[in-house]
Image 1 (spheres, helix red, strand yellow):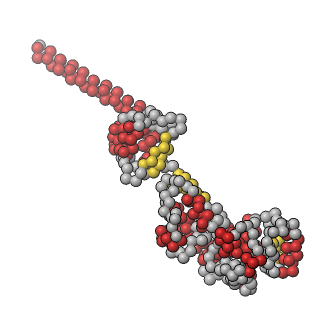
Image 2 (cartoon, one colour; image 1 turned 90 degrees about the vertical axis):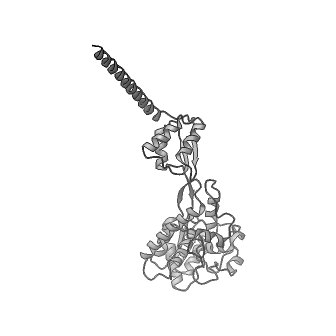
Image 3 (cartoon, rainbow, N blue to C red; image 1 turned 30 degrees about the horizontal axis):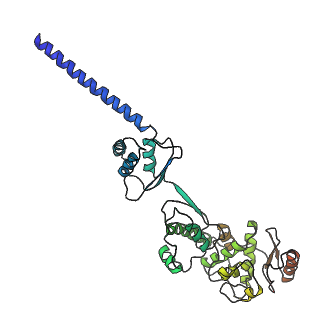
Length: 353
């Protein structure tokens, strides 16, 4: 009887310990699940955090714990290890109000970093693109203050001149992305597009290479007042090249003037011998003069057929196209009589006035 009584007592004790452990484990699991979905201590403005290259999840968890944003940072580390989510991406993160330990870890695992944007506008020069990059405090500036030669060396591109080689578009990037990385991405996009369109070019074009087509596209970009006229403008320039006529286009003159351009071209400017003055040189200038759009590249390689050799701006964004110099000069008188007297001195036989 005593032996039975002792066994019963032991059973009761063991059962009690087991139940206590089970209850404790259940309570602990319930608390942990609740902790996973409990919002962090983030105010209404949200919280930004930059995890730099080489820093770990433990660093972030401890840091957030020290700042009283995350309760029980050790739990986050343990849960990340248990779920194989302890490898996180470096970058700048924004944690909105309502972020929980679970959603924080998911954001880190995905590398859902804050993205910034920079836009290169169609018709901009390379100098303007660099200025846009320099204005962004989120970019790591490696090209600032460097010479043209040093910039090309840092970019690591097999080109002799940077003008025209960067595709005008909006580029997204994370904090501390370098200007070099953004420009390399832009270059690859332009190079790919140019090569693709070059393979689809029309027959009998007066270009020796895809690069010459890029030069022409940049001129078309700067000359186009209305998008629908790109093909026609391309047709005019292509026919002039085929006939050995000078291009006589103002944007090339302006580009050659550099910083001395003050919004006005004089007869002296048109007569000045520079590599970019298409009123004095034959053929194309030595490099592009701007960042051409995809539409201008396509127009340069597939110009509109016709017999026009001249065009003049009407003043409403469109142009009047003419096949003869007499017709062109009449159009010049018709559309430019009301222009400011200081607009510019008219050349003897301009393509566009």
